[in-house]
Image (cartoon, rainbow over all chains, first blue to last red; front, side, top):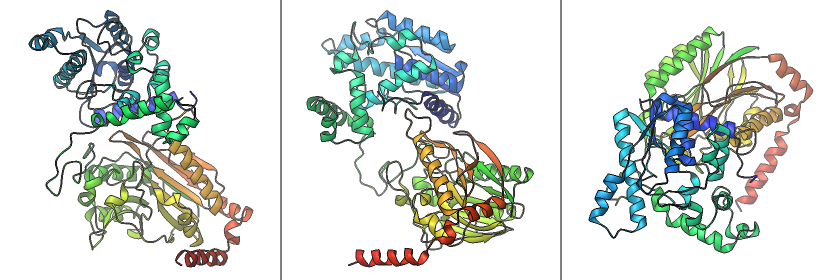
Length: 273
Length: 283
């Protein structure tokens, strides 16, 4: 894990500073996030509480009736430890109302709908409390496309989008995220017993070791094979990264004018901030 | 002569000339109050860094009221500061001014515009064409803007032009968090400023900014490096800071006696070989 290991004190300073600076410069001082009971959102809650003060962080757990009760317990544990604002909002009524009309929808559609239902709740509460929605997708998930577009991938600011899952674990240890949250198997909690690694077919550690060399170090396929990675694993991960690239981009706009948004109309989002 | 330099490690607002002028004026007041003779600001202190299409909107000509104001202020303290300059033929430069005694003593237009990785300067900005040393009340100075310093020839030319103090204005994004003590970019810069000072027997006054723009942090760590390469003082990482450091003429004199590399530097050989390389390359 040598290459992936991070100076957690420095990383913490940068990420806490990021949340404080990028939230306050738009003229608000509050952050809103979905607290799933998993490690990624727990870490973001810790970062946000340190950056904005626990009284300015609003966390919501949004369980569906099939969600593992342990998830909610872990979310509450995290919120209690930090002293942040915390509320449970069930999404069962709205999700069930929708799928009553479409009873044959498969698990993927249901999972995506739930993720997007949660997104609308977070954005509604961001308007209600006057805060920004904080993203909780890490770099591994974002690169693999293991998330729902406009669902859990939607946010105003994402403090952990450039750190791999292994680094999320390392920073969570350093910041005092409760042990039971760090040690449990990562899960999207869409159905009982689901784990990310089972669904992906490889472990996050394995993916991180490969992605770090492939993406950050720009090693060629030959170099990765020489490093000992299985060619089939390399190709599988590469396919996932390429195949999910659309999720990491804004919608494509058909160009007809001389200045098209994001093409030749280019401004930083922090324009004037 | 001995002088006191202030390094204003500020956090400019992106594209907000008015707000940034206020930040700059307060820093100047503080510098004057602290007894500084010279105050150095970061690259693009007046405008912020990731300007993109804002470049033409925030550009100033040398007769702009903001520059006039800085000229006035320079009657009280010498000032080195970065901004976007627009020329009469509407080219836009990433420029730095050195103002003293109510006048602009020098304008440096950034020569090396990084356009790789997270940088995109050459898309928006025109390239400067020269490195020139100039005389100030503290001795002969040279100005570099950020990436300029990563090209060996740039500080070399200034030192050969008899500069003994190099000012580097910077907006260096922090990146490369790893298992080591230092941030990748700060470790690299610290090696560079120290080595440059040591190679050229020059002092280096390095001023970097802080703050975030679209998630990119600027790491600060502004510093004064003695001609021996030793860091005299360094500002905080990632936070606004204001450093006031006494710069000792004696240290420069002693270093130049102790390691007279610049005295012995042979421009004739360098030029002869560069001309040969140029001849061979153009065949």
